Length: 396
Image (cartoon, rainbow, N blue to C red; front, side, top):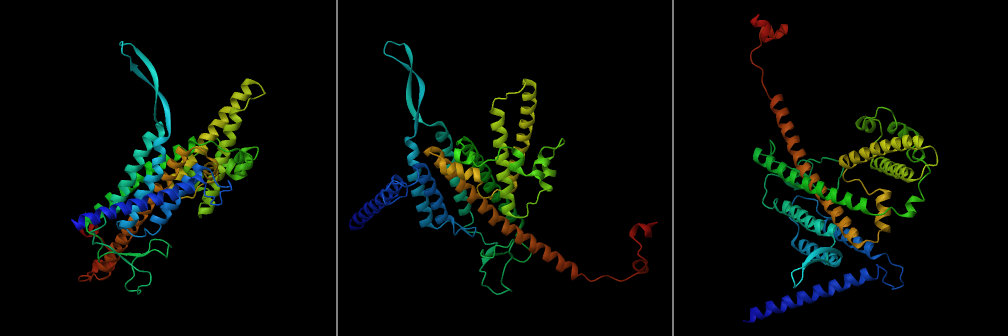
């Protein structure tokens, strides 16, 4: 009896603490992160976006291994994400429905319903979120690979796939993973890749819905040639265009250069779109020909942008994306964009950690095969070996 009362008291205390935390969070949101109350804070949409971004950074920032999330981190993530998502429950729109009156006649009335984009994407993002955490839970009892600290002895250190020295190195058994374990790892990678693609698609859709702020439009040059630069402009506007060949001719050796190209491509697309929507004062034939060319160049630029996103999924946000997020006033868009972005980042992190293990496995297999080849002892030497004759020559 005493224990039961104690449990009830603890639940009440826990609920009280959660309520106080929620009050504190939402008071900061109302103030727009300006605790002075001077009205200099950011918009509610940006404040919500920052909450999800900062929460993800604090919860998943230490997820350097393929292992289940810590229980306290998992609870905090679920609880505080639900707090933010609860805001979208009250973002409604009027939709027409058929209503039957008492006399049997039908009439159309308007009722409130959660906004369509939120009604579709919030459950989808929650499902993707659960898929990722379940994927991490699947590594709870694995024993075919382990992590070695960067401070370990050279003989004990594992394999590092890239130059990220701060990450623990992966160690696999001699000879590599078993066939079943290798297939299972690939299955987990495919699952994370599905989450990555779905969250990228939702994020791209939401960003496309956001309005381009005037502050960004004012920074654009007058024409696409100035935005792209002479070399890049000629590469896109050639008569026979190949997107793969174009990217092969561009220096993409660093993240800075890739992001710079992305910024230029997006700026040129907006300039072409703006000019296509402007009224042409010249003859209709000339205007039509120019519009067709600009539409063609815009399609090419969009193809390049898509390839960059696929090849470099962890690329930082472009100038256009950051400008849209900072100027956005739509709370629903802010929640969808930030939630999909952090899931995209986490899915990519999980994929990278899986690739670290597969790389260590491949490295170990190659080392084993080299050792076996070097340890082979040749059989008795014949005159054919000295003369370099093959088996076909002997038969002939």
